[in-house]
Length: 136
Image (tube, rainbow, N blue to C red; front, side):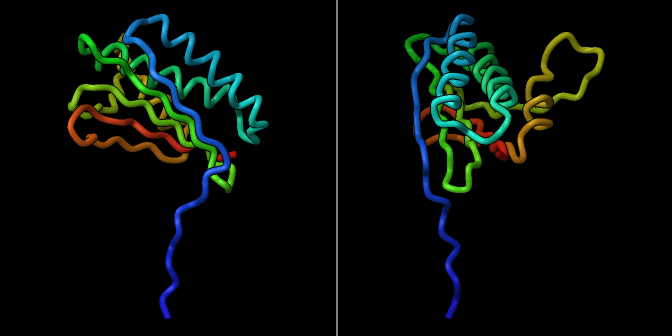
């Protein structure tokens, strides 16, 4: 008899769309901080806010398409792991840059340093999602 690996159950789930403007980054930070406080998430909320800020900022900067918005989704799994998804309409996958001399482009490096796992994938029909897992 084989044992099946069942996905972790959701404890909390929240999503919201934002316009592709720089103001959305600050709004996302405030809403994520508030949501994690309401959930009494056991992890470092400021790390989660920073990860969200970097991902939303990248979507605004590199994923802007007229008439589209970005989507942010937070999920707290049964094991208290937090999953942060940021989706935008551009079907170009991101690159992690490690250029100490560069003025920008290190956001994903920050995200990979704070998250336990980071991945990205194309979405059916339009765009991509960047996903980060944060431990409690």
